[in-house]
Structures are given as structure tokens and as C-alpha cells.
Amino acid sequence: MSELVTGEAVALELRPAKLPSRALAVLLDLAVALIAYLVVTTGVVIATASLDEAAQTALSIAMFVLLLVGGPIAVETLSHGRSLGKLACGLRVVRDDGGPIRFRHALVRGLIGVIEILMTLGVVAVIASLVSARGRRLGDVFAGTLVVRERIPVTRTGFVPPPPPWLAGRFAGLDLSAVPDGLWLAIRQYLTRMQQLDPQVAWSMAERLATDLAGRTGAPAPHDVPPAAYLAAVLQERQAREARRAFGNGAAVAAPPPPAPAAYGGGVAAPVGVPHVPPAGVPYVPPAGAGHSPVAPDVVRQPAPPVPQDEPPATGFAPPA
Image (cartoon, rainbow, N blue to C red):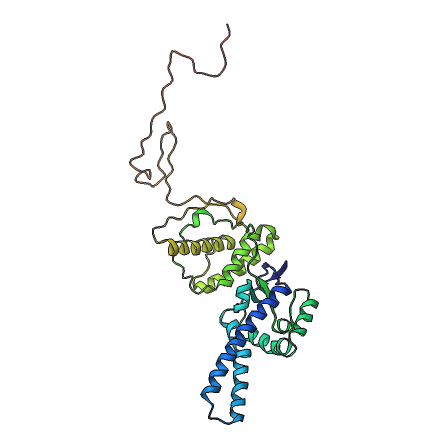
């Protein structure tokens, strides 16, 4: 197990791929690339049979560079680290901080891979992977990447505490389309582990994440809401939207249980708009300035049963003989 720390100081547990699975993925990628190279080169040679030998040699070199070097680079860039061989073996190339790779990472890995895999028949890559603590070859070291396993046994994930009930529906109008997946992952990781952090560190991390989230949504974070509660409420709103998108607008989303008052650094206020119904036998006193009772008209209060005057009230004790 390898623990990586993101830019938001959130620890991610990733499992580096072992050398046998990486070697099998590389062999599958090379087999696909060689088949494509032979098919395309044969077609180009037949189509350019009228050219001289120098032109055919130049075309062969160009096909080699495009298919055996540029092909893997393009595939890893477009698939964010999942080539055909890695997809078959359940592997993926990620950055050192756990994020998806970009073109420059795939370019460095591909160019150095020509030397340590193609020219040396993989000897340099095997030695570098055996020496490295996380099984990285030279291309991964220079590109700042890591090959990890995606197919891992299912484990119990951390519990994300729900937001306070008084924040339900408050952020329904936010535009969440510009929030990247990496920020959602950081928010979820923080909410699952904020109880394990120092209170001051947890508060500062929540403020930074709330600032980033507010910048992405275009609406400022409310000052009367703790940062952690704001993050949990917006995350719940995103999950509710995904549930409605997946199951239809009529799908009912169960309300989560209310958290402890100290979960987000503040008390939990009573929900707004819920009338207070006094128990039976207690007269209702309307609030000052209220012209009508907030209790629904169909609520009928039953008076308390009278105590018979000819019998002493039951006290639980037997009278003396």
C-alpha cells in the first residue's frame, strides 16, 4: 500500500502495480502496436511500390515512429493512463499526487520507453522497477508518474457525515458543472477523515476547500455556515442531482440521519417551517405578534381526561390499613 498526499493535504491510498502485471501489460501493448505496424507498413509499401528505395525507407521509419512511439503516447493521453494492455490487466498510470496524467507525462514516458523498453528489450525497465520502492521505471521517474492497480478488493469506505438538516435544499440553485472531479474527491476524502485531524488543521483545510468550491460555483460561501457543513451540503446536493439523473426526476432520495451537533463545529438549528404542536392537555399560546396559529387546521388537540373527585389520585403507594 502506498499513501500519496494531494495538493489539498488529503492522503490517498493507492496500490502500486507489481512487475509481472506491468510486464504483461507492456507485452500486450507491444503486440497490438506491432500488429498495427505490420498491417499499416504492408499497405503503405504496396501503395508506394513505384517509389524508389530511399522513399520507402523513409516511410518505414515514419510508420515506426508514428505507430510504435506516437501510438502509445496518444492512447495514454486520450485514455488518461489506460492503454489496452493496462486496461486488460486492471492497471492505470497516474501522477505522483494521484491525479490523471496529461500529454506531457505520456510524452516523457513514451520517449524514454523507446530506450529502456524497445532498444534494450526491457532490461533497463526491469532493473529500474526492481530497484524502485514503488516499482517505477525510468520513464515514470522522469515523468513523475506511477502505475497503480485499479482492480482491488472492495473495502469499507469512510463514512461521509451528512450536513445539518437546516441546510437541506439551500444550495439547490448552485451551478456545479465547473467543479472538477479532483475537487469532489478531495472534499469527500476530507469529510471522511476530518474527525481524525487536529481541529485547527481541519478548520483551515475546510476553509481552503470551501474557497475553491465557491470559486468554481461562482457563488460565495455563506458566512453563517461552517466550512465543513457547507462542503457536506454541496456534496449532498451533487449526489442528489446524480441520483435524479440516474433514476429519474421522480425518484425519492432518503434523508440522511442528522449528525452530532459538534460534527461541523456548530450547533444544529431547528428546521424552518415545521410547526410546534404542544402535547395533549397543554393550552396553546401563540407567539407575540402572530395573528394566527401556525398549527395546521386538521390538528385537533384532545383535552386531558379529568381526574375523578371521589377517588384519590393514584400515587403508586397503598394506603395504610
